[in-house]
Amino acid sequence: MSYTKSIPFNGSPSDALETARLQFAVHGFQVDQPVPNQLVAVGPGMQSTNQNPILGVSRVTITINPDTIDLQAELAAVRFMQRFIFFLPPALCAFVALILAFIPSLPTYTPILAFTPVLPWLITYPLIARRVKYNTTHALDTLLHNLAHANEYAQ
Image (cartoon, rainbow, N blue to C red; front, side, top):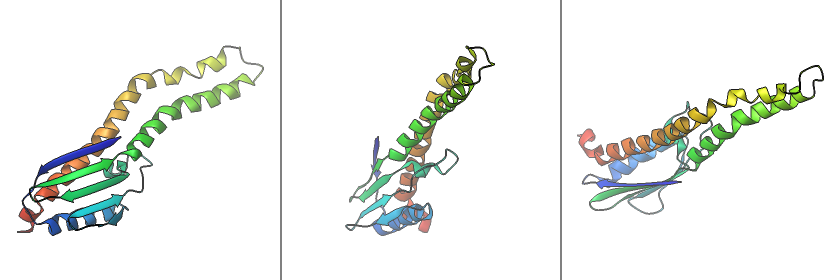
């Protein structure tokens, strides 16, 4: 899953890249500047939806051209979190059903009842998955906007 955005830019490339470098470094990204006017950052990953949404980015490249600032991001951490959220509840229910299947005093249909908590998950999962992606792309948009106006804030 990738994300790309470009917006107009007429400020100082060094100020914008320094702002981006600090923002990513604070959140544990490995930051590199392979060429002038470009910044590459590799993220630590996302382990919880309660973390800063910027951690949903696994790799980001910010390139400053004479009149635009371009952002290309790989959202592998978002994809991982979406898959984790999808598989965790059914896996827990399967585990409970397996345990219940080996209790001889229970009726035979009891293990099937262990899957009833997953039914609401069929509705809430798509909402949560979309929200994780939206939060990350919104954080990237905000960062890009702040970078484009970094020279205005410095004055």
